Image (cartoon, rainbow, N blue to C red; front, side, top):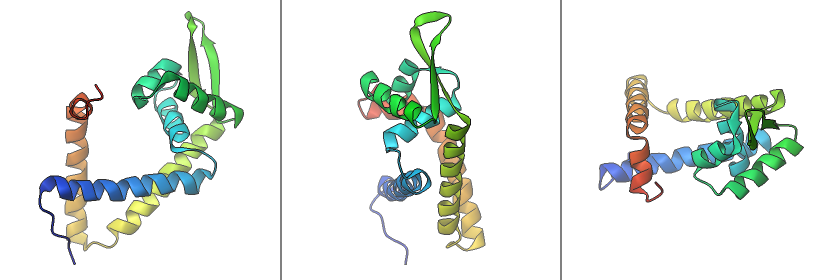
Length: 155
């Protein structure tokens, strides 16, 4: 039976909570040893290789010392490499190792599988509409970018 929501935002919040639960459990299931912060740092590094430590901290909206600790742990696990930037000796460049990229791919696959299980609960025509709406939502979220962060007071 479909839930009744008092507003569009409440419906979106319920969907967000479900997706966050899937995201969190997929990291735990696929890695078994990484915190969410460590995985997020690995994801940013994989998406933006090579990237500076300060850029990772900015992307995650986190304290640089927290990100440094997370990245140091990833280096010790053989999931990330770090090196001094030859163009700016004060910067540290980060890049995932092959093993680190495999972890990111494994988490993505786990997330696809979990989302597929949920989407399989929907009738085909409704599934197509939900998938289309999710694509439009992702595009809109990308378009507002910093506006969502500013609304949270994090900008």
